[in-house]
Length: 126
Image 1 (spheres, one colour):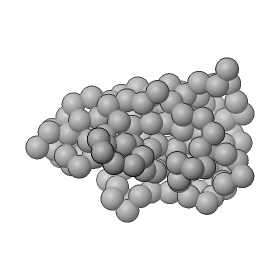
Image 2 (cartoon, rainbow, N blue to C red):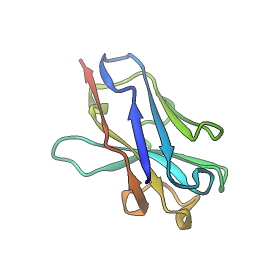
Image 3 (cartoon, rainbow, N blue to C red):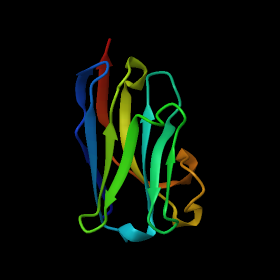
Image 4 (cartoon, rainbow, N blue to C red):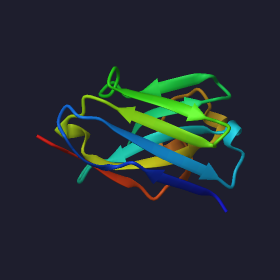
């Protein structure tokens, strides 16, 4: 059974930091691009950051470049998203997802996703 389990969300003041974790199981972790997506109320789900071991690449949305850092511990099948200098507009449900291996190195879009986690809420207060 495929599982992507997120943790680390919460409430933080603007300018603060959070680290999200995604523990994956049930599929060949190294073959997949793993990404973080977010969805705010009334908005479409968007790709925030993705990391590919196969393509040896990372992707960041323009809105988070320089503030967020994605990393992967392949020995633990875990991906992290370090979020610094958080802004109120970062408030959303954050989802971990596994992108189809066909799209390795081609970015970070929800239409490329095979598997989704359940999501974790991140709320940034002003």
